[in-house]
Amino acid sequence: MNCEQQLSMLIKIQEMEFVAVELNLYLDTHPCDKDALNDFNCAVEMLRKYKQAYENEYGPLLNFGKGEYAKGSWQWVEEPWPWEL
Amino acid sequence: MKKDFYKSHKQMLVDEECNEDTKMILAHSYVPWQYYDKAFCPQEALMKGTLFPELYGPYKPPK
Image (cartoon, rainbow over all chains, first blue to last red; front, top):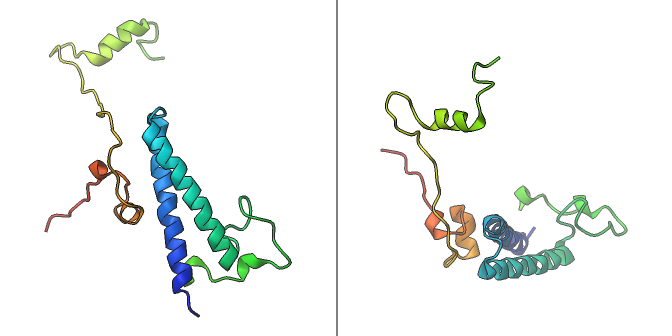
């Protein structure tokens, strides 16, 4: 199986998610920092795009909660687990 | 029951901060204010465990 593309998309998601968490924590103590808020919003928007692109290509990232409803089949188990990529 | 139960709050603070023998106050902790003016790229941030270059401090075990 060619997982290279899937893995690289997953890593991009992880990286952007980390940036969002870091700016989230910074903003907890600096809520009026406009630059940080702007960068946080950019990170969240890019993260949303990365996740959407990933899910369109490879299926749901989460079993339930934030993703879409299951379509037709139980896609959650159709893709390799992250550690199998 | 603790013996200082009936002490005023103010007196308890004084007792905590000032040692009777030395008249020195205990250590106070603080952190300097952080400013956001530079950041690692997302890839570097995840690898280093922080987005903020000034917070990057890897532990190097002694050889």
